[in-house]
Structure formats: C-alpha cells, structure tokens
Image (tube, rainbow, N blue to C red; front, side):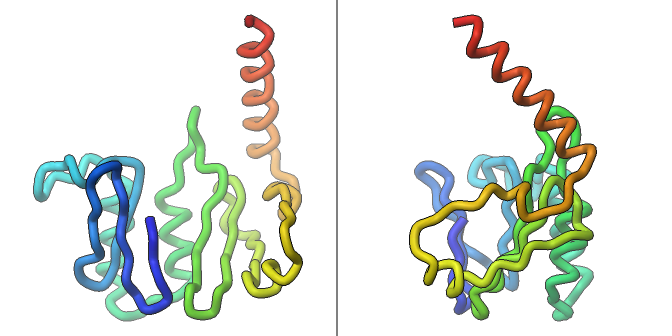
Length: 149
C-alpha cells in the first residue's frame, strides 16, 4: 500500500493497482483485485469498513487503534505489529503483538536525522507473555527447520 500526505492512496497487487475511491482505502490479507464485486472474503476487512463508515467524519488515532485491536489476528499466524501513520505530521504510532495499550510514537524527521540505524521492535515495548511465548515457539520451529538440512 502506498499513501501520501494529501490523502491519495493505492494498493499494488502484482499486476493490479487499486486506487482509493471515496474517503478511505482498506487493505487486509486478500487480493481485492480478484474478489468478486460485493463479495469480500475477509471478515477483518468487513469489520474495518464498518468501523470507518460508522465513524463518519470523526477520524482519530484512537479510532484507528480500536480498528487495529478489532482486526488483529491471533493463532498460528498472529499480528506481529500494527501501525498508524499520520502522514501530514510524519509520525508513526507503533503497536506490538496485539497490545494496543502501549504505543511507541516515532517522529520520522527525528529518526531520519539519526542516519542509517535499526531498532528491534520488541525492545520498544514492555515484555508480554503472549509475544514471548509465540517468539520462543517460532524460534524453536526455525531451529528444527534449519537443523534438518
């Protein structure tokens, strides 16, 4: 997905480009370009759409935080991190492993002035049992995969 501070946005899906139509553009884990008109195969997409439509013009960071909380995935392929971009102010609101109570606020101008660097996302947040348990299991599965070769 690409978006700009002027409000334009598009989703690129291989050879298809879907441009923003109306007030918002939503993207979840399915190819919108191949979905039949009026048939959305993703409940998360439907939930986010309903929440945005019911908000009317009352758009806020808190609304998007609630949308992220309502649409995150759990189970074998959980949401690792979620973010909200305020493109006009160049600020990112970052959430880790479906914990929407703790946020890391990133000022992009400040970060870019630091030059090339990286930060491990989990280091920005308090430890949580769910995230650490998933990471430990994931690391164990990767070790097993790579030791079989």
